[in-house]
Length: 154
Length: 455
Image (cartoon, rainbow over all chains, first blue to last red; front, side):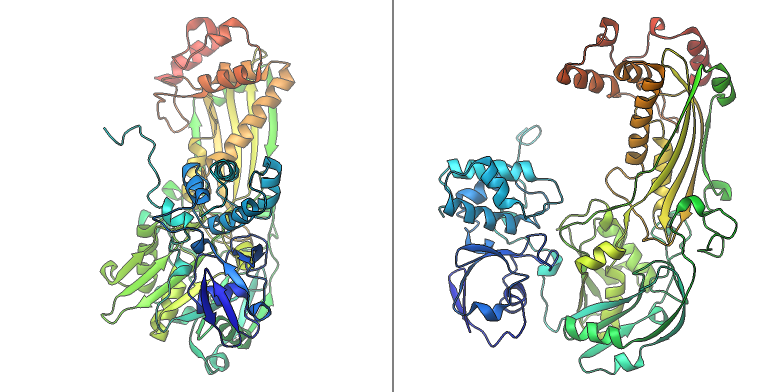
């Protein structure tokens, strides 16, 4: 099967019942998405599949032949952060950083869809993501700041 | 002075927002095996049979470790400070909490390791379990350790952490009212987003590299070295990038057993706990049982406190003596009480061992004290802010363990809260500071008493 990850096309042997998260992390060494709960509840493994945020720990990779997957690693490089990444840095949108890849990807999808979201929209879009270091306020403020600074644009 | 007082970007911030931070689970090494644990399905049981031979012969299985493989089976994280260890690295003969590790399998992948765990021949004889620390001293209570159900090794081999100050009988004689309350905060799971995970790599030169999510590298290093009976210079710890810990990753939960399996297999081994394991058997914040009786005057001075604390240590001691000692030092909260009679016991139950979590030992008593002060105010019909301000820590007051406060923040904090929420206070309270109490705010009997206990 074929899978495009952060713009790079991969040919994969049949992945059986492996999840997308497993394929990304263990086969392609794309470790940005995290294995936090592996049961779809924490959001740390979130990636975009054809533009929509999905929990990669619940998705059978075999069902994604030809899909375009975007992870946190494709949002922007260290030398050229996206407005959203820069805003997370500026507004302390993380502490330990383990949930951050999922939050960034979900917020990115929100800004693509709705460039000037209300606070309520932001909270709804990030509602399924858990941060245990209690950084929610900083995260929401970061998304608001990124929207003002030009949205998700890379 | 480019740095002092400046707001600096985090050194790890760019890595976090680009997904490039390397947590332990992100580290990959060649020839790496995966591990899965056999854990006790029962809260309390005798292990009547443990045979790993069939599982060890399965295709893809490289090593299985049990208690028989551990050079030094029992070691406590505070052993270096005189607290005897009581927890085996892997269960031997008896399991004392659900999820207690019995064996670790290292195999080509997680699925194979899990199959081998299922194939281990193990039998249990269930024993009655103890979950409520209030019942630990009852005749007929399940016995958790051979020396009993509470920790016996405080100073001078006392079984209690004890504080006595002033003249508690005087305080209770002199009081207008005794206000009593019982406070029981429950256990809390830290639930960091990153579960426990370790990667142990036996190096060609005989050394051992451990990629660890510990919150304390040197602490965990000494624990691993002690169990494996290795000199420290044979072990290299790599860590510092921790996906949330909150105190729960002070315990060396995965590193040692993983290292043991790696040595036996002569291969790198990674052991990543599932979320279910985290909730089932990672250490938690302790449940506490606190009984407080305060001797108070009708105008709101707290003359004395009698307090009994029971700390739920879970099945083993781990760092509980540290937490309970800190609890005892803080047992009056942010307030000064001149006469004290305090006893605390570390009680064992058949629950997951407990450990540090954000303000270890002190948050429980802050919770109890704040509720209790509000209760006193209600009983006496006094303003809860005024009651707190009267009894607040001041410069020169001493903590229950005798440390003099140099900059206590209780008074300014309470005044700021009152101001922020528009709670009106009389002028003499608004004028209070953290400076030592002046005579006009002290009733005569307290002057006399404080004079006695301060010197």
